[in-house]
Amino acid sequence: MGLRGRLWQLSASELRAAAIEASAEILRLEAVRVAVVDELSMRPDDQVIASRGVGAWLAANTMLQIRDGKKIAALGAALRPFPAVAARFDVGDCSFEHAVLIVAFCESPPKGMPEEALPRCIDLLKAAASGVEATTTKVRNVIATLERIFESDLIPPAEDIDRNELRIASTLNGRVVVRGDFDALTGEMLLSALSNLTMPTPAPDGTPDARSAAKRTADGFTELIRRYLDCAKTGVDGGQRPHVNVHINARDLAEHRDCATTSSSSGGGASASDLDVGHMPWLGPLSVSQTRLLGCDCFLSTVLLDGHGAPLDAKPGKRLVTAEQRVALIARDKGCSFPGCTCVPAWTDAHHIRHWANGGPTVMNNLVLLCRSHHRLMHRKTGFVGKWVIRIGVDNKPWFIPPPSIDPQQHPRPANTTFKT
Image (tube, rainbow, N blue to C red):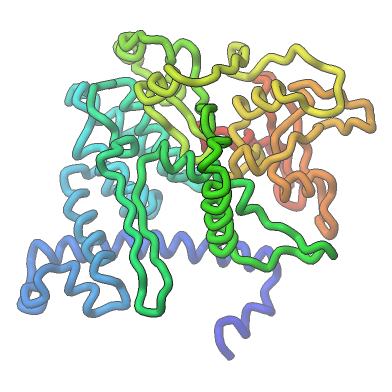
């Protein structure tokens, strides 16, 4: 009996435990592979030398591609000067991708960062990359904040338009292959333009959309081109700048470059959450300098925040969420608030914590952004045992209390904004 044939005997809790255990083992073995390959690169034998490097040798003797073998060898070499990062990676508490991000920052820190600040920066990055709550967006946000603290005139790689490339080539069978590499702002514009065009569309009889995500993206891209060609001569699509939404504190948007260095030089050092950077709903952090550039030619929406950074509300009493309230919700929740969810604001609904039919007002402290899946969950999805409870905490931000079937102690969990800010 094969592996899949044995799984039917396991309960749901045993399947979850097996998935988590397998994932942890993969992280551990990945670290072992990087360490072994790095040691072999420093003591190459005839086979490695004949393969023109340990990365190519690894690819030739496994199912890896050469580029992946070289990435493994490169990470092993890059970790040598940074034992603290290597130690965290070796115990399986940091993924391969996050280790690459951290050592890339350590190898090329901001020009304005003093050498003695590097250990503290590594600690912040290790904290962001550790545990089950670690995400690439979270690590990139910490890197963006550190670049904000030690701001320089260098263009971050994510915003360097000189690196942009788009290759379009026809194939032998008459099809076309498109490969591109763009800066974060261009990527944000593309994802924003495609968002509504790539959503699943049920058939008239209610049958769910059977297209894969890749097929929906391809169809949306085709529709985007068609609409452009239909409107290009008339200029209907031109003239209005803010097709990209960027959130930033007014203090940080102002032309005061010294405010960050002042904060970082005060006693105790700056936490990653003490300073803000520009934030785009799709691609995350954007440097203050680039945000200021966009601010020269845009429409500005003002959202008043309290001391915890939660938006204040001044327009209660309507069942439908107003445009102003939705702007404020996006500024607070950054997308779906459900713990662990990464859906962007464009794919979310405004959910009444206390239902409107039960007297719940349409005010900020009774609203939360949820993606369609988690919105249905809050309204007791069919077959779901137990119910999540949402409460607005003393910080004026949503907290989620899981049902006993998930957490017998029902410990409150913070909203998912920690993954996006």
